[in-house]
Image (tube, rainbow, N blue to C red; front, top):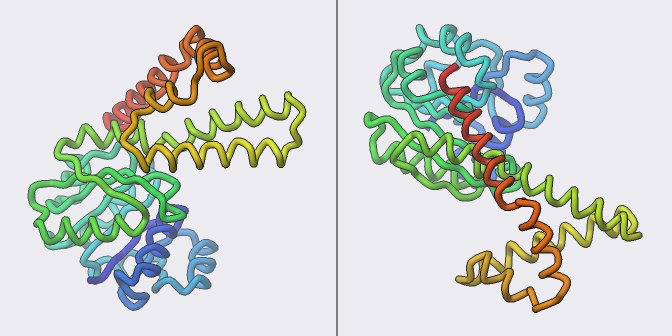
Length: 267
C-alpha cells in the first residue's frame, strides 16, 4: 500500500514516523508532499520516505492520501489535486471542521475517512475518533484503523457529528489538562516550592491519578470520595471548586470548543 501524506508539519511527521516505527509500512511505500522547500529539505534528512514538492509527481501513485494541513488551506489544496486523483483512492482527513461532504464535493471523490487525533499521538499516547463515507470498504477501514492505532488508541463513530464532539473533548482536551496543571504549579510555587519541585509534584500527581483510574472500575466521583475525609484538606479544596462552579466552567469550555468546531465546518 502506497501512502501519501500531504503536509509535513507536526501531525504529518508524527504519522510518518509512527507508521514506520510500527513496521506497518516501509520507507519505500511512504511519500510526503510538502510545499515549503525549506521544510521539504528538513523532512528529507529524516529518511522517512520520499519527499515531493509537487502533487503531479506523487499523488497518482498513492492508495491512501492523508490530508495533514490546516483547514484554511483545504480549498486551495482540493482545487490543486482534483484533476490528479482517481475514484479508487482512499482519502483520510485530519483537518478540524472540514466535513466529509465538503471533501467529497470538492474532490469528486467517494472514499473518505475523517479523523480527529490529538497531540499525544506524537508519543504514541494519542486518542483518535474517526468515521467514514459509506463507500469505504471494511477492509479499507481496518487498514486505516491499524494505521491510526500506531499513534495510540482509535475509536470509530457512526455519526460524523461526533467528530466535532471529539474535537472538543480529546482534540482540545490536552490543553484543558495543561491549564489545570499550570494553575496547580503556580499554587505550589506560591507555597514555597521551587519551579522544578512544583513541576515534579504536579506532573507525577497527574500521571499517578490517571494510571490509578485506568486500573480500576471506580468512577472519578468515587475516587474523589475515597481521597476525601470529612473536614479534611481535599474536602476543603472540593468545596472551593464547587462553590466557584469550576465543574460547570469546564463543561462550558468544552461546549465552546464544540461550537467553534461546528462553526469551522460551516465556513
